[in-house]
Length: 297
Image 1 (cartoon, helix red, strand yellow):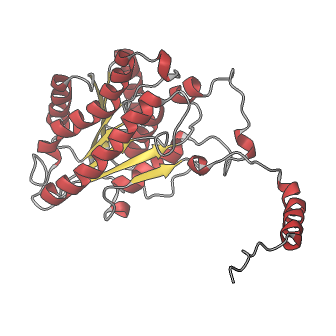
Image 2: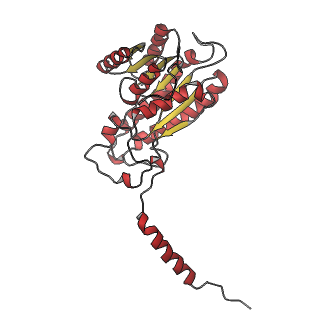
Image 3: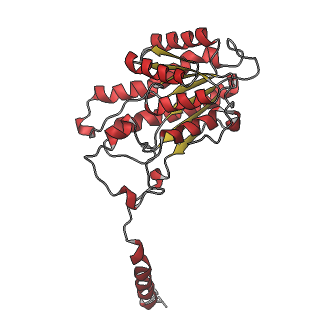
Protein backbone atom coordinates (compact mmCIF):
# COMPACT_ATOMS: atom_id res chain seq x y z
CA UNK A 1 0.00 0.00 0.00
CA UNK A 2 1.34 3.42 -0.93
CA UNK A 3 2.06 5.77 1.95
CA UNK A 4 -0.07 8.92 2.22
CA UNK A 5 2.95 10.80 3.59
CA UNK A 6 5.68 12.56 1.63
CA UNK A 7 8.80 10.44 1.28
CA UNK A 8 11.00 13.00 3.05
CA UNK A 9 9.00 13.73 6.20
CA UNK A 10 11.73 12.17 8.37
CA UNK A 11 14.65 13.29 6.21
CA UNK A 12 17.82 13.64 8.26
CA UNK A 13 16.34 11.98 11.35
CA UNK A 14 17.95 9.12 13.26
CA UNK A 15 15.70 6.54 14.89
CA UNK A 16 16.53 3.77 17.35
CA UNK A 17 13.95 1.00 17.71
CA UNK A 18 13.93 -1.78 20.28
CA UNK A 19 12.24 -4.87 18.89
CA UNK A 20 12.87 -3.31 15.50
CA UNK A 21 13.99 -6.50 13.81
CA UNK A 22 10.64 -8.25 13.44
CA UNK A 23 6.88 -7.78 13.41
CA UNK A 24 5.50 -4.32 14.08
CA UNK A 25 8.94 -3.01 15.01
CA UNK A 26 10.42 -3.99 11.65
CA UNK A 27 7.53 -2.41 9.75
CA UNK A 28 8.03 0.85 11.68
CA UNK A 29 11.77 0.63 10.95
CA UNK A 30 11.00 0.10 7.26
CA UNK A 31 8.54 2.98 6.96
CA UNK A 32 10.79 5.34 8.92
CA UNK A 33 13.61 4.47 6.52
CA UNK A 34 11.43 4.84 3.44
CA UNK A 35 10.50 8.32 4.66
CA UNK A 36 14.06 9.56 5.08
CA UNK A 37 15.31 8.34 8.46
CA UNK A 38 18.48 6.43 9.29
CA UNK A 39 17.59 3.43 11.44
CA UNK A 40 19.24 1.52 14.27
CA UNK A 41 17.51 -1.58 15.60
CA UNK A 42 18.12 -3.38 18.89
CA UNK A 43 17.30 -6.99 19.72
CA UNK A 44 18.50 -10.07 21.56
CA UNK A 45 18.86 -12.46 18.60
CA UNK A 46 21.70 -11.78 16.18
CA UNK A 47 20.27 -13.83 13.31
CA UNK A 48 17.05 -11.81 13.33
CA UNK A 49 18.96 -8.54 13.59
CA UNK A 50 21.26 -9.42 10.70
CA UNK A 51 18.33 -10.46 8.52
CA UNK A 52 16.42 -7.26 9.30
CA UNK A 53 19.41 -5.02 8.64
CA UNK A 54 20.06 -6.75 5.31
CA UNK A 55 16.43 -6.25 4.35
CA UNK A 56 16.46 -2.57 5.29
CA UNK A 57 19.73 -1.96 3.46
CA UNK A 58 18.34 -3.69 0.36
CA UNK A 59 15.72 -0.93 0.28
CA UNK A 60 18.45 1.71 0.35
CA UNK A 61 17.85 2.54 4.03
CA UNK A 62 20.89 3.44 6.16
CA UNK A 63 20.52 0.78 8.86
CA UNK A 64 22.53 -0.92 11.58
CA UNK A 65 21.71 -3.49 14.23
CA UNK A 66 22.92 -3.89 17.80
CA UNK A 67 22.49 -6.89 20.06
CA UNK A 68 21.09 -5.98 23.46
CA UNK A 69 18.51 -6.75 26.12
CA UNK A 70 16.30 -3.86 27.25
CA UNK A 71 16.21 -5.41 30.73
CA UNK A 72 19.93 -4.66 31.14
CA UNK A 73 20.85 -1.05 31.75
CA UNK A 74 24.38 -1.59 30.46
CA UNK A 75 22.98 -2.89 27.17
CA UNK A 76 20.63 0.05 26.83
CA UNK A 77 23.43 2.52 27.49
CA UNK A 78 25.80 0.79 25.06
CA UNK A 79 23.27 0.61 22.21
CA UNK A 80 22.23 4.24 22.57
CA UNK A 81 25.87 5.35 22.58
CA UNK A 82 26.74 3.19 19.56
CA UNK A 83 23.77 4.58 17.65
CA UNK A 84 24.93 8.15 18.25
CA UNK A 85 28.53 7.21 17.45
CA UNK A 86 27.44 5.66 14.15
CA UNK A 87 24.91 8.24 12.98
CA UNK A 88 26.01 11.34 14.92
CA UNK A 89 22.80 11.93 16.87
CA UNK A 90 19.49 10.47 18.02
CA UNK A 91 16.11 12.00 17.17
CA UNK A 92 13.53 9.26 17.69
CA UNK A 93 13.36 6.39 20.18
CA UNK A 94 10.73 3.70 19.62
CA UNK A 95 10.20 1.18 22.41
CA UNK A 96 8.65 -1.83 20.70
CA UNK A 97 10.30 -4.72 22.55
CA UNK A 98 7.69 -6.83 24.35
CA UNK A 99 6.96 -10.23 25.82
CA UNK A 100 3.65 -12.09 25.87
CA UNK A 101 1.98 -15.48 26.22
CA UNK A 102 -1.44 -16.83 27.13
CA UNK A 103 -1.78 -17.88 30.77
CA UNK A 104 -4.41 -17.87 33.49
CA UNK A 105 -3.49 -15.94 36.65
CA UNK A 106 -3.37 -19.04 38.84
CA UNK A 107 -0.91 -20.69 36.44
CA UNK A 108 1.30 -17.61 36.08
CA UNK A 109 4.33 -17.63 38.34
CA UNK A 110 5.47 -14.39 39.98
CA UNK A 111 8.68 -14.76 38.00
CA UNK A 112 6.73 -14.95 34.72
CA UNK A 113 4.73 -11.89 35.75
CA UNK A 114 7.94 -10.05 36.61
CA UNK A 115 9.64 -11.01 33.34
CA UNK A 116 6.96 -9.35 31.20
CA UNK A 117 7.02 -6.22 33.36
CA UNK A 118 10.80 -6.13 33.11
CA UNK A 119 10.72 -6.26 29.30
CA UNK A 120 7.71 -4.04 28.60
CA UNK A 121 7.62 -1.44 31.34
CA UNK A 122 11.03 -1.43 33.05
CA UNK A 123 12.72 -1.91 29.67
CA UNK A 124 10.80 1.04 28.23
CA UNK A 125 11.84 3.31 31.09
CA UNK A 126 15.45 2.08 30.95
CA UNK A 127 15.75 2.92 27.25
CA UNK A 128 14.19 6.35 27.81
CA UNK A 129 16.51 6.98 30.74
CA UNK A 130 19.64 6.12 28.75
CA UNK A 131 18.50 8.06 25.67
CA UNK A 132 17.67 11.29 27.51
CA UNK A 133 21.14 12.84 27.30
CA UNK A 134 21.14 12.48 23.52
CA UNK A 135 17.50 13.14 22.71
CA UNK A 136 16.95 16.26 24.81
CA UNK A 137 17.33 19.73 23.33
CA UNK A 138 20.99 20.64 23.15
CA UNK A 139 22.05 16.99 23.18
CA UNK A 140 24.93 15.81 20.96
CA UNK A 141 24.08 16.59 17.35
CA UNK A 142 20.90 18.45 18.34
CA UNK A 143 20.14 22.16 18.47
CA UNK A 144 19.37 23.99 21.69
CA UNK A 145 15.73 24.74 20.90
CA UNK A 146 14.08 21.40 20.22
CA UNK A 147 14.23 17.92 21.66
CA UNK A 148 13.48 14.59 20.05
CA UNK A 149 10.61 12.15 20.14
CA UNK A 150 9.81 8.98 22.09
CA UNK A 151 7.15 6.47 21.01
CA UNK A 152 6.13 3.65 23.33
CA UNK A 153 4.22 0.69 21.92
CA UNK A 154 1.42 -0.20 24.32
CA UNK A 155 -1.83 -2.22 24.01
CA UNK A 156 -5.53 -1.90 24.88
CA UNK A 157 -5.71 -4.94 27.19
CA UNK A 158 -5.78 -2.88 30.38
CA UNK A 159 -8.48 -0.42 29.32
CA UNK A 160 -11.06 -2.93 30.49
CA UNK A 161 -9.76 -6.42 31.26
CA UNK A 162 -8.59 -9.33 29.13
CA UNK A 163 -8.67 -13.06 29.64
CA UNK A 164 -5.27 -14.69 30.30
CA UNK A 165 -3.38 -11.41 29.94
CA UNK A 166 -2.99 -10.11 33.49
CA UNK A 167 0.80 -9.82 33.17
CA UNK A 168 0.70 -7.86 29.91
CA UNK A 169 -2.22 -5.70 31.06
CA UNK A 170 -0.22 -4.67 34.13
CA UNK A 171 2.92 -4.05 32.08
CA UNK A 172 1.18 -1.95 29.43
CA UNK A 173 -0.69 0.07 32.07
CA UNK A 174 2.74 0.96 33.42
CA UNK A 175 3.96 1.85 29.91
CA UNK A 176 1.03 4.25 29.49
CA UNK A 177 1.84 5.84 32.85
CA UNK A 178 5.48 6.24 31.86
CA UNK A 179 4.37 7.87 28.60
CA UNK A 180 2.17 10.43 30.35
CA UNK A 181 4.64 11.28 33.09
CA UNK A 182 7.62 11.69 30.76
CA UNK A 183 5.47 13.78 28.42
CA UNK A 184 4.74 16.11 31.32
CA UNK A 185 8.21 16.33 32.80
CA UNK A 186 10.49 15.91 29.79
CA UNK A 187 8.17 17.90 27.58
CA UNK A 188 8.51 20.77 30.03
CA UNK A 189 12.21 20.50 30.81
CA UNK A 190 13.71 19.13 27.58
CA UNK A 191 11.17 19.74 24.79
CA UNK A 192 10.79 16.00 24.19
CA UNK A 193 7.45 14.74 22.88
CA UNK A 194 6.47 11.37 24.36
CA UNK A 195 3.52 9.46 22.93
CA UNK A 196 2.30 5.90 22.65
CA UNK A 197 0.51 3.62 20.21
CA UNK A 198 -1.88 0.89 21.35
CA UNK A 199 -2.23 -1.68 18.55
CA UNK A 200 -5.16 -4.04 18.26
CA UNK A 201 -4.94 -7.51 16.68
CA UNK A 202 -2.35 -7.24 13.91
CA UNK A 203 -2.06 -9.99 11.33
CA UNK A 204 1.17 -11.83 10.56
CA UNK A 205 2.86 -11.02 13.87
CA UNK A 206 4.26 -13.23 16.60
CA UNK A 207 1.80 -11.67 19.04
CA UNK A 208 -1.19 -12.64 16.92
CA UNK A 209 0.12 -16.15 16.42
CA UNK A 210 0.44 -16.52 20.20
CA UNK A 211 -2.79 -14.82 21.26
CA UNK A 212 -5.06 -15.83 18.40
CA UNK A 213 -3.85 -19.22 17.21
CA UNK A 214 -5.85 -21.28 14.76
CA UNK A 215 -6.89 -23.56 17.61
CA UNK A 216 -8.99 -20.75 19.10
CA UNK A 217 -12.28 -19.91 17.43
CA UNK A 218 -14.52 -17.08 18.58
CA UNK A 219 -17.42 -14.96 17.44
CA UNK A 220 -15.66 -11.60 17.57
CA UNK A 221 -16.70 -10.90 13.98
CA UNK A 222 -20.31 -10.64 15.14
CA UNK A 223 -19.74 -7.58 17.32
CA UNK A 224 -16.31 -6.10 16.58
CA UNK A 225 -16.41 -2.73 14.79
CA UNK A 226 -14.56 -2.78 11.45
CA UNK A 227 -13.98 -6.49 11.98
CA UNK A 228 -10.73 -7.41 10.31
CA UNK A 229 -7.19 -7.88 11.43
CA UNK A 230 -5.07 -4.77 11.35
CA UNK A 231 -1.87 -4.63 9.34
CA UNK A 232 1.62 -3.78 10.54
CA UNK A 233 1.39 -0.94 8.03
CA UNK A 234 -1.43 0.62 10.08
CA UNK A 235 0.77 0.88 13.15
CA UNK A 236 3.72 2.17 11.14
CA UNK A 237 1.59 4.92 9.62
CA UNK A 238 0.46 5.97 13.11
CA UNK A 239 4.11 6.03 14.19
CA UNK A 240 5.04 8.16 11.18
CA UNK A 241 2.30 10.62 12.03
CA UNK A 242 3.38 10.96 15.65
CA UNK A 243 7.09 11.12 14.80
CA UNK A 244 6.73 13.72 12.06
CA UNK A 245 5.88 17.41 12.18
CA UNK A 246 2.27 16.43 11.50
CA UNK A 247 2.09 15.48 15.18
CA UNK A 248 4.21 18.33 16.52
CA UNK A 249 1.57 19.44 19.06
CA UNK A 250 0.70 15.96 20.30
CA UNK A 251 2.27 14.99 23.62
CA UNK A 252 1.30 12.53 26.34
CA UNK A 253 -1.25 10.66 24.20
CA UNK A 254 -1.53 6.95 23.49
CA UNK A 255 -3.17 6.53 20.09
CA UNK A 256 -5.44 3.49 19.86
CA UNK A 257 -5.12 1.73 16.51
CA UNK A 258 -7.41 -1.29 16.77
CA UNK A 259 -10.44 -0.71 14.55
CA UNK A 260 -12.60 -0.06 17.60
CA UNK A 261 -12.06 -3.50 19.13
CA UNK A 262 -11.58 -2.19 22.65
CA UNK A 263 -15.12 -0.77 22.48
CA UNK A 264 -16.60 -4.14 21.56
CA UNK A 265 -19.24 -5.94 23.59
CA UNK A 266 -21.12 -9.14 22.73
CA UNK A 267 -24.50 -8.60 21.12
CA UNK A 268 -27.13 -9.73 23.64
CA UNK A 269 -29.89 -9.59 21.05
CA UNK A 270 -29.85 -10.24 17.30
CA UNK A 271 -30.28 -7.03 15.29
CA UNK A 272 -33.39 -8.24 13.49
CA UNK A 273 -35.11 -8.95 16.82
CA UNK A 274 -34.55 -5.50 18.33
CA UNK A 275 -37.49 -3.77 16.64
CA UNK A 276 -40.07 -6.42 17.59
CA UNK A 277 -38.82 -6.66 21.16
CA UNK A 278 -38.82 -2.88 21.50
CA UNK A 279 -42.48 -2.73 20.43
CA UNK A 280 -43.44 -5.45 22.92
CA UNK A 281 -41.63 -3.76 25.78
CA UNK A 282 -43.11 -0.34 24.97
CA UNK A 283 -46.64 -1.78 24.75
CA UNK A 284 -46.19 -3.53 28.08
CA UNK A 285 -44.89 -0.35 29.63
CA UNK A 286 -47.86 1.73 28.39
CA UNK A 287 -50.41 -0.80 29.66
CA UNK A 288 -48.83 -1.25 33.07
CA UNK A 289 -50.65 0.49 35.93
CA UNK A 290 -48.96 3.59 37.18
CA UNK A 291 -47.88 3.03 40.74
CA UNK A 292 -49.15 6.03 42.73
CA UNK A 293 -48.54 5.85 46.48
CA UNK A 294 -51.81 5.96 48.45
CA UNK A 295 -52.60 9.31 50.07
CA UNK A 296 -52.08 9.55 53.82
CA UNK A 297 -54.92 12.05 54.10
